[in-house]
Image (cartoon, rainbow, N blue to C red; front, side, top):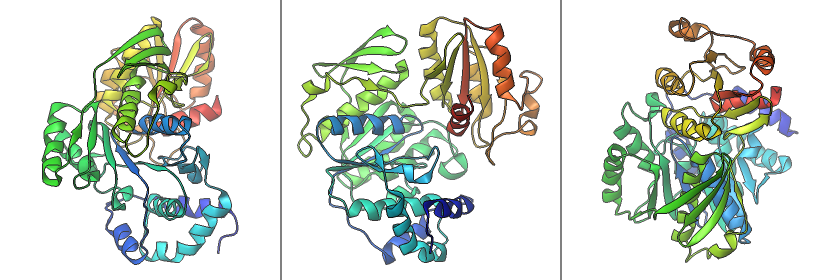
Length: 405
């Protein structure tokens, strides 16, 4: 038996694998160890925006007095932060007790780290008296560990673009269809603006089979007060949004989701006008001034395009330091980033899946590489005092940058 959370964390890191992933093992585990959840569930997936959408839903329901259980991924620092109630992470002792209860079975069924954490979440949430459960998919939809839940009340797909092609499919249609795997029979669904027509056609196939009704977003207006403050007019109300311009799309989704479930979880939307909605960390987050140091976890072509549109509001030169994991579409990311700056330096970070100098070899004629981005930043601070220094790429890279700067 494990005595401390730190011991469990070490064990989980040793089992953090996803080769040839499917969710057959976790379904077999659940059959042997079932759980029952009788609370409203909102299931959220998408290439970009799912974390932000959950964040805004959490704020909407918390400010309305509801007790909210949330499952978020990935973890940024420790695994237990993925499981939280009313914005507070699960206690270490509780996490360890659930882990000890099932660890032998976890190993017997050869479960991944994410699957183990997901199961602990479901068992924990099933024991709580909460009002609503928000589930963020880890990867895709149909094969994701969170998709073992029997029933949900609303499915959300925030956006669809090429990602995890080894698992989800080689085309937008295949990936969209995989994401729509979270749909449940006769359960409504909601699509964000980042879902294009090709993706919608694939999603519609699943929706037709399951007789799922789509909930459509209403029209809205946005006024840019500053690069990081915006006024959003939607459904007869005006909300204050603090964050990058691209993020208000996810606030629209969250507000629409709350309206769709208003019969189960009544909301006074006029009261929400008094509560500014702040974006998540790592979304065009400012870490310093003179020069303006910004970090953003944009790791898809769509996300980079939206980030670019938001950065243009500053009207300042941009110097980019970029790093990503091996599974990201590097050519498209670099091509998109070049549209806002040709001053791009490639780097790496402490992660076993991070791209190294060897992985960038065909791009090194066009983009310089450094192993020491901290020293590079020191140089940039002297050279570009009135510009923007942008750290961008995988969330894991941004997490490391936030700790080191």
